[in-house]
Every structure is written in C-alpha cells, then in structure tokens.
Amino acid sequence: MILRWTGVPFLLREFVQRNRVTILCYHDPEPKIADLHIRKLQHLYNIIPLSAYVNARRSRTVAALPKKALVITFDDGHKGNYGLLPVLKKHQVPVTIFLCSGIIGTQRHYWWKACVDHNMVHSLKLVPDEARLAQLADCGFNEVNEYPERQSLSRAEINDLRAAVDFQAHSRLHPILPQCTDKRAWDEIAGCKLDLERDYGLRVFALAYPNGDYSERELEFAKRAGYACALTIDGGYNTSQTDLFRLKRVRLNDKADVNELIVKASGLWGIVESIRARSAYGYAHMRRVILVRRRISRTNAPKMQHRITLAQKGRDNDGG
Image (cartoon, rainbow, N blue to C red; front, side, top):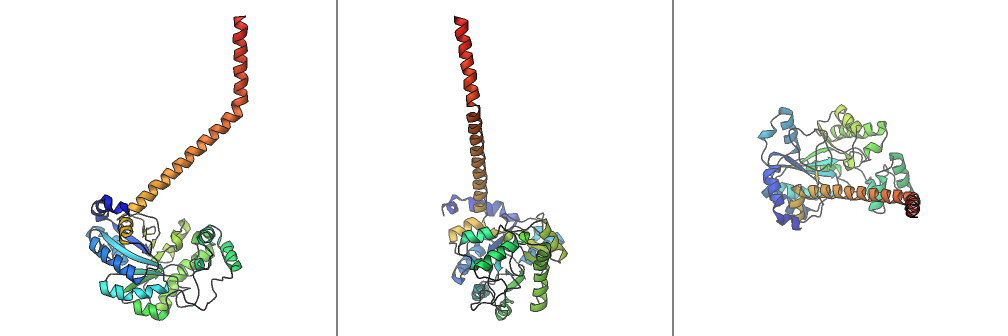
C-alpha cells in the first residue's frame, strides 16, 4: 500500500495519536496474522487494556496513560479466537473480546453467515428486525436453532482464554439494534450483561454495539443497564472528551498485510475514506444541480424561443 511510504502514518502516530487512545476492531484473524500484527503494533504503539482507558476517564487521569496508547478488540466471539491463545501468551498483550451471550457456548450460528452474499447481508441490516428474521427464515435459518457445526467459542474455550482475555458484551444474538423494538433492544443490551455475569462470572463494563449501529435509544439503554462505556465502529481516535458511550474504533481487515495495518491503525485510511465520501457527495450534488438546470432549461426553451421570435419581429418592424 503506497500510503504507508508517504510518511503520513508516521506523522499521525507521532503528532496526533501521541496524546490520544486508538482502539482497533478485529473479528476472526488467523493466529499467524494476529502474531504478525501484534509484533508490529507493539513496536509502534503502547498496548493497554480497555479498562485502563475507561478507568483513566473516570479518574480524569487520561494524560497519565502511555503515549500512543492502543487497545485491541475482537467482535463476536468466533471459535477461531481460541487459536489466538498461544499468540496472546507469547506477546503478553491485553485484548478484549466482545461476546454474543446467546451464541457462545451453543451450536447457534451468526445470522450473516447464512446469507448467500454480501449484498444480502447489507440489505438485511437496513430493514426492521422482524423483516430480517423473516427473510432469513426463507433461507432456512432461525437464530435460536442449533446446527451441527459450532461457529462460536465454547464455554471451555472461554474459561481457557480468561487468563489472557478481557471478555465484554456484544448483545445476545447480534441483531441490528436500531431496527429492533424497544423490548428487544433492551433485552439484547441488558440481557447480554446479565448472561455473561451470571453464567460466566465475568465483570462486564463495556458493550460493543452489533455492527456498530446505535441511536440515542441504545446509548440510553446501555447507561441504564449499568455499562461504563460502549464502543462503535465510528472511525477516529479517543481523548479525555470522547463520549464514553460513543467510543471510536478503527476497523481492520482480518487478512490485512503489514502495510495495510500501519496505514489503517494510524487513522490515515479513515481520513482518505472521509475525503472520498465528501467528494462523492459533492460530485453527486453537482450532478443533481446540473440535471435540474437542464430540466429547467428544457421546460423554458419554448418560452425563450417565443420571446426571441417576438424580439426579432419587433426589430424588423422598426426597420421597415
């Protein structure tokens, strides 16, 4: 990735990230890639637990955190995360895995893995929860059914990982919360915390919104349920002023090479994407303006031609 060699990632690390906290978001990387990433991140940043940042916010001591502080998180609780245990022991780095309490320890499946393609996944994220479940049922999927193959961490694996991993909440069954009814959204947010604390003996203080989607309702529910913070996938860095229930994270491709890792972890890729989005919006807006003007011109053309004809006749009469 050419962006790595522009020098901008270095400048962002040394002058922007230096006094901010960056939180990375993975899902299910292979151990070999995780090992490579962690080694590189240890060289470039100071990796801290999520709890260290949250506690510093509460005690107003964020300035005392290490420079270029970075938090590593994983969403969903995929069974492949168990393979990271040797890597985590080797590097002795703190990480957080956000668990779906209704899927871990069962043979239930993640709903998006039942979709035929990415377009279907994307479209189902945009419809009301009842419609999403109905369309999945047409594909033979039910979120509470158990299947022959396990997709999430087992209870035994979670117990093995506890010495190296901080486990936190990611809802029960991973619906798109803003598309849910009040009752279901509350059950997913509050119920996940209850499940993890009661069934696994975990100390749960953080929620990662499924798919990063949230509204004011989800923020309020997270506070009422007793969470100390909640994480989005809104890009950017975190400071002493960032809303604790809108913490920002940088999304990483589970198969990213080192160049992509350096560029994305620095926040540069997010900046480029933001510029592209604004440019695309500006271009689309410009096209709309041009099309409207063309329609107006076509509508007014007969009137304009009539005026020109009358003016020409007037000039001819004046000359005769």
